Amino acid sequence: MVSNKLVAALTAYSAVAAAVPVASQTKGFSLVQEAIPKSSYRAPAAHLAKALTKFGAPVPAHVAAAAASTGSVTTNPSDGDEEYVTKVTVGDSTLNLDFDTGSADLWAFSADTPSSERSGHNYYKPSDSATKVSGASWDISYGDGSSASGSVYKDTVTVGGVTFDAQAVEAASSVSSEFTQDTSIDGLLGLAFSSINTVSPTPQKTFFDNVKSSLDKPLFVAILKHDTAGSYDFGFTDDSKYSGDIAYTDVDSSQGFWSFTADSYSIDGQDAGSSIDGIADTGTTLVLLDDDVVEAYYETIDSAQYDDSQGGYVFDCDADVPDFAITVGDYTATIPGDYINFASAGSSTCYGGIQSNSGIGFSIFGDVFLKSQYVVFDASGPQIGFAAQ
Ligand SMILES: CNCc1ccc(Oc2cccnc2)o1
Image (cartoon, rainbow, N blue to C red):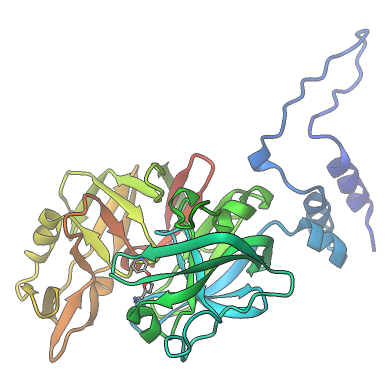
């Protein structure tokens, strides 16, 4: 049943985005119009769908489809929060991809991957409407030494209900042993800036770059969790998924990363008084910091030591592991000590979730940090926002 209020609302939504002043005794009036910035533009049907929903009327499927400019997809941690696995439809295949804000290639195991290297994996099969990108190739290496390479197709990709029908899909012809052995994932979906896409001779756009102008807002949110399902949300922020306010800070995308400056950091609540430049990287498991910060952190744990055989700092599993926090503006983003007691390293020894960045010149805020926060990756700016989950 359509109520009078609904009619009024529909009328209001159909008006141009400017108030029409009430006619007065004067001989005329002028109308000050303000262009709607493209980034805040919403599909007209979105306003209709919102009005119908607001007044309890059903939203016809064709209106809902035209209005759909947001999406949400579940992401699940692999054992021990090693990586986060998200289902994506790529061509005719449903693949488990690792969404990676630290790289910009969407690639997958494919029919071109030698069967000996792809056992235990789902793989990409180009759809009937797929086209091969003539003369294009890709070759990528990651911080953990893993790598992959191959050829390129354009195909339809759907993430959480958001579809792009000409997405560059990088089909692997070769993958390193780390990927062959990691049967939790069938490839990666890059969410860094397209400037670091590895396709040659013509770099390709990421999925987010391709869809961002059609989203209600040009942003996506990573809601990663410890040992339970989280989500990647596209085009909207959801205040039921975080507490307090979102603290935003500028992103320097000049190196292709979501790079930001944390104003300060604290160990066990003791402010160290210096800033940290780092990247938000959902594809990296741990938090990788400058050596002086790492040493200061593990000095607070009596049993902590650097173990060459483990390639990092370890400590007694029953140790009291302190929190590590960074500040962004007046917001303090805290990694609980429990998250830094990351994994067993044999007998009663455990491996730290904070390790050295090996002197690469910037820090990497990987999943150990990100899973403690609600993180908004906003292309307008660009900027990054943090809130407590
Ligand atoms: C676990 N190694 C295979 C693997 C899974 C995801 C990735 O990719 C990475 C690795 C490190 C940093 N960023 C992305 O490699």
